[in-house]
Image (cartoon, rainbow, N blue to C red; front, side):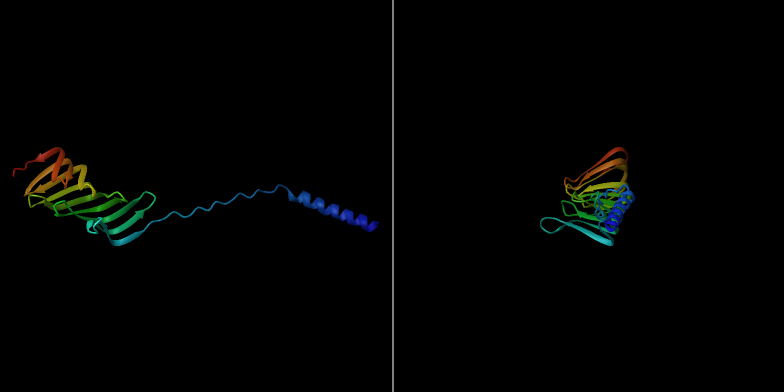
Length: 184
């Protein structure tokens, strides 16, 4: 009987120790592991070529540095050269310090010492456009800016605040504060 009593006392002691030492138990919270965000691609001295349904290039972009930002669906460009042909097949080139291409939109925004050159369709005359910002819609072939712009054509210079150039319709419109004269 002493053994049974000793055994019951020992079991009671163990139960007491376990109950008293257990305290509050923490409830495990599930850990949420987020997938790392897609950093996109980057490249140096890259050429991007957008082709049409026929496989012919619609426009090309050469850049010293290209950095994709997938979350914003944008591509950042450094030291950019945009090349495209107007509806008459004349080649145009626009250079800038920086650029941004909105993915799946065909919208190219250039900024920083933008310089565009090309042949004005139907005239055979070269045109030279300088500004600080220029947006080019490759789908509609419309180049525009609200910034001050200078147009040099046939040796004549026009300055304005803002411009819309529709290369498909062969129309260039200077927006406001036009200075200079152009007599054909």
